[in-house]
Image (cartoon, rainbow, N blue to C red; front, side, top):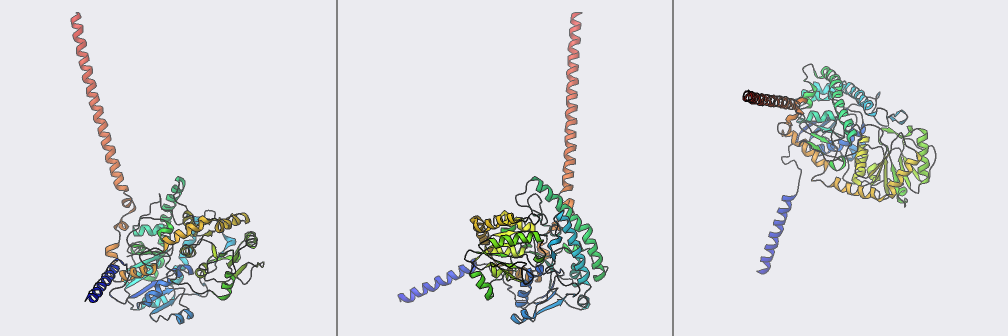
Length: 547
């Protein structure tokens, strides 16, 4: 009897513990198991932009949703063999005459004079190419002529709104995805807080906290960039979109303001805490795989023998490292040859100009897998967000040489966290690189800060991929726009910033102050007249007495 009683109590404890555990556990799942038809649009030709969200697209297909992907990066035969996804349909945009943006940046042509403004003009030219080439593709015209219906649309938020015509054409709720920190015009479209007094602009690369001059620069740049996008980029987008989607297409800005959610490849541990709307969702590191793949045998043997530690050197998918100016390349090779470390370097041709026994080069590297090798102690990169996010996740100290775009912003973010040394490309020399390598390998504070940042970056209620999938399904179920959209997105700038309220208050206050002083003046004048009258009457009485 006692054994039966004890066993019953034990079972009750197990059941109670399980219930408590399930109550406290955060689970992101699609509870109704509905399968949705999803259209995703990635009209930009940059590979890194697509690579961020490729895991999301494949995961949606893996969960049974029917997904159509418009992009320049269709699934390869190898990927299809490894992971067949029959409900994943590619609309391939690749034009052999144009190609895609891989190894495109020529370091010989890099100039950082008036950099933010030059890059804004570059974004405009890239937007023109993306809109004209993508929207005139025969496959796009065929899709628009079809009677397809979709439950939700995913589209990239970057440098153009011309693809928002798909939203109007299919009359479908949509959410946008951003591979980088939110741009000024996107914050305005969403009605999201973008206070330049403490939120650095993505184009400047300012460290936090900002001093007075940086806050002034930040404020003026944000205002200029918003105006530039609104009055130059958007009108051209509108013309192109109207030709494709018809003259009844609403203003693209109006469509942009209807986004149900914005999924952003950032995390507050890295880029800093800031107020966000509930439908602006951080999914930083969504591209980072859940498991580490085995490295090729030759790379394993090379890194295993790096008893004093190894350096990973990679300038990403866009920058062509072989275009490095000769003087800077000589300085880099001289320093790398002299250090007692192994170096593994992403280099686009078979051989370096000079053979170095401690350096291994590869045209392509499985970057995240290499970073996870225990002998990799430092990452030298360009500040691209994918590489920076991977290094933060692993807990690696960094040396960053930003070249263009948001790389300056990302480098400033990790520099603020004390995990990276930032070098100027213009000032790159043997001395500056040697000093940076010494700090990265030998200053323990960088590794300690990197490990702390990694812990905070990883610690979340759900993985970035689970979060992104849940939000996509949430919007597809019809729960997005009516409940989450900020009314601030509808306000003109003077109402959003309370300029009208301030003017009324200033006018009323000025009027009240004027009236108050007029009353005081009248009161003083009356008192003065009364005093003078009294004094005059007293003087008259005195003169009569003397007479």
